[in-house]
Image (cartoon, rainbow, N blue to C red; front, side, top):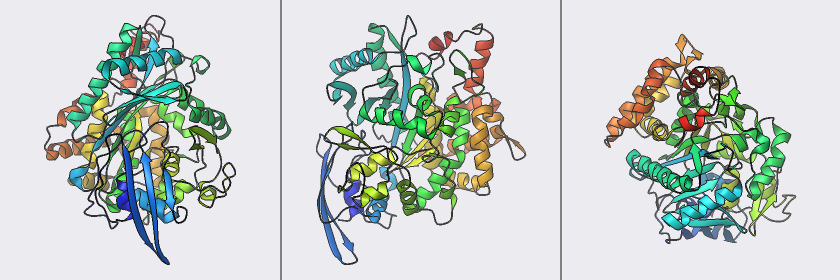
Length: 511
């Protein structure tokens, strides 16, 4: 069994496990299936031929949140090639591709519209566990999440409530999962006077009044963020997103999908733009959440021009990730502050915070989660450019990307569309779309004209999939046709019907 085969049996993410095995028909690195226990504990023995012999290593990986700690027993520390093979282990044949949808939302008191304190969120988590059979996830004595059947519920730094869905085969399944989650949350929340809203940036609360969740990694990030950008704390405490995680069959397939994902991410940002307010007034943007990411930490954000270079592949992404400064290492149920330190030093046992210790695969996976480009590579690809919004748009976002990336004809059409776009044009879109949305000038027209072509590609892709999923795009069809984003509709309500009051937005976007 190759190193890629063994890693492939590891969980889909730190809190969401993918289907077992992969059987990659295209990837040059070997693939085979491993079984897992019902509790998400995976064991694998593997070996990889090295220039001077063979190296064996046994891994025990536990899927959990906070991060799992794996034990690696065997000869030698991880090498850069191990990290490359780790990413390559995501290759899987098309019939095993899955859809993983994640979304965040703001909780608030229905009467006062105040943010929920941790104690109130803990009450909600306990209620979901007791009524619907979710398993509690603890950090010390604090409940910080839930897990059930491949899904997880977790808390973002300011109490944003996140569902990380199970890897599912069709959009019908993933939308049913979203609806089931929202039903459960609403059933418990309404009884105790709480509501949840879908929007990309908190429209009312100053950052000073937002409670901080009791998670160790967030303390480290909160202290580090102001050193490397001006908007990092806003990102942590006042933003919500919806994203979809998708598979690839080979390194070549990954490269095509990654390039399309990065180049077309501004179009998703524009279509789903839904964050035009800050502290009860317009902020000058349609997607302020997207703008925030332009000044969080330039070492770990952006649209990654190197992905479009002719030699890009798994190794080049590893090189990039190794140069991104670390945040933390998780040991003995504690977060160790490694902010600004080098994973390269960690590989050599020279990490100042843990002298002599070398990383495990979980350390590498945790490090990859602290990198925040517009599209992100793990053992799958994450599309990260959309604002949070109402439940129908939570289903439309994965529909857009599944239609584009899971059909060969649509993917090739998207590749052809972006093939002559320059680094400068992509950078321009990244800078201007948060403010101008679909009205951003692009080449000889507006971005909405490109978005119309993109939507047609996605429609065709969904039709050829054969699951009758095209209807999920109806929610964004009018947006793309008119070029009027959700944010612009909210601004019209604010200037008109709402009489320049922000409070009605809580009811307008209530789940």
